[in-house]
Length: 547
View 1 (cartoon, rainbow, N blue to C red):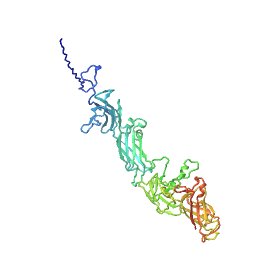
View 2: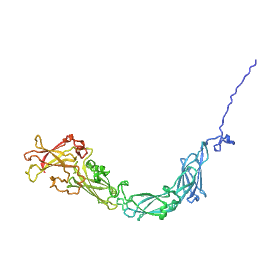
View 3: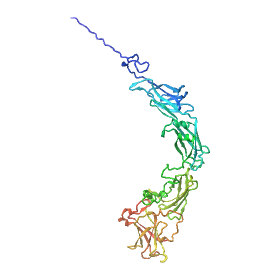
View 4: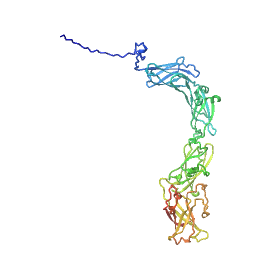
């Protein structure tokens, strides 16, 4: 039997990828389109091209074209110039890069366009993709425009610093791709002694009007003017200006226009505030105005005169913010006591701009007491004179003080015995701080220690009072507002109708008794300057003296 030996030799198959030496993305040697093998380029490159024209569609040769991408460096920039036909081409730009193209030429505006260098055609990677930003039109910058700036009072706004932006200073006239462009010319200037500010090297009004669009896209000049202090005294003579002026308007006016700057104000242009006003203060009663019943704002306005809203912490100044600067040395401030008889000196301090002031009351004012404020000021803008009246209570809202009966005195009548409390004579009680009463009258008890002393109804007697007990009271010395700010007071009064009491042989005390409010509605409770209700268990006592 013959034996047959079979030797199996392994077959080694080595696979080689198709080559693409010319980098076109197609395997070398392939001619049949149906058998094309796509090869992804290792480092795909692309180009950026376009054409530089003026706004009359004429070529601009020699324009500098620079590309800004992540790989651009000072040693290896992407830069070229346009040829005689205005065309340019930048090569070896990384495919897929978002590029910023800056095109500039002396005597023309600079335009910046962004584009994306293609790296794929559909799903197929490509090499030598082109980003064509199209025909770029640059406006010429050989013209000038000027504006005459005046302050609200008619004076030249000399030295005013202004800035202008001419838009659009360039356009992409034709672009079939995704490029976008931005072009404007920004120039700064300073007004001369006549208030005339001239901006040179800008596109002419006619050119901007011609290449701009319509509506908000119309060609024109965005103008900004800083607030003006013409004489350097720290008080603004005019507010700033920020507005776009259509180029077509300047074409009609010959490239110049007069602008009256607005009055300076520091209230953010609140449309509800007109003229010279006190727009901000920590004493809101200064802005109180009595409104008619039925007025929608009456309830909110009445809150402005509540004592709690007008608490001024000891050592804290009164802050005053005006809508216009106040003329130097024109602010007069008077602080008087509740009765308008005693005047207190205050320290008046203006801000550098003259629109904010502080008034520092003296340290001698007493906590819980009412002090009236009278102001007079003149607008530095138009000379308007305004006056304001209000009041404040000295006190810190964080530390309410307990109510006390400070004093109780009686007035000898003309018919009774001197030194004796006779029927028909007045008793005046004063609390340690102002009290806001309600329609419910306060009980006042006069006692010599007996078991059932007589009780009387004490009524508030804010000065100046029409109560017969105060017919001999000295009149108010200073013109305080006693009509609108007489709700809260430290003073109450009642007429005694009990038996005669000799004060030389008897110790007489007066009690302010709030216990009747235990059975009353809480809305009738008296209120302290700190906004706290006087407890229904309160009973305050003081010895009776003679006025």
